[in-house]
Image 1 (cartoon, rainbow, N blue to C red):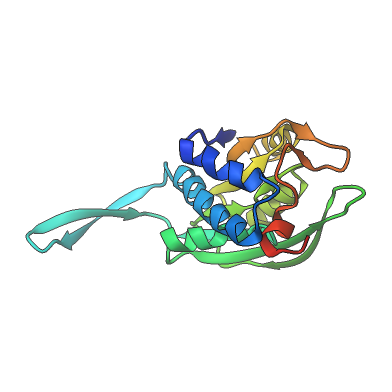
Image 2 (image 1 turned 180 degrees about the horizontal axis):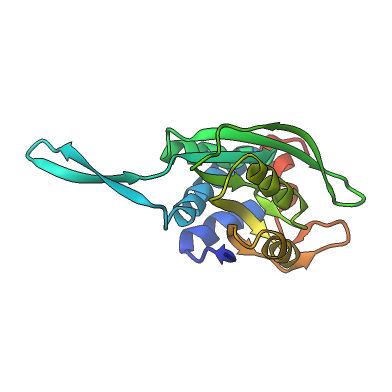
Length: 206
């Protein structure tokens, strides 16, 4: 399904704040949340709707609501920076967690924790802010597929071409929505120009 790169003035505004090395953790967290609203809006722009009957203060009317329940899976720990915005906009969302850490020498994902709600007949949003090699995201997507998910969208803040290519190769059925497609990965598998380590900047563990 390919990758969608946001192109909106607010997207560029918020992303620039996140890239700035002088942005303090509180502002970084708040800006991440604001950017997540834009990512979520784009990720759900083709969500299936159903009609239902309602009463306005004046007359009977037909309303529209999401036809499928939504599950959000935060890839720990950076994915936690996106979860509040999802809960704000979709209050009845079910939330799962996928704990993975990167081997700093090989850049391969190492699983340490997973906890998922029911995935059957639900739209699943996988929250992985940094799409670098694609190892963590492709692993998380595989795990939610194993749990029964068949309608999956990934939300990322920044992506590298290497990770995007890996997702297209391994999970071509998954749409990826990102705020930016950056230049490349450096020798340490960090996204360039990127914004540093998202988890460290969110939680002040620099």
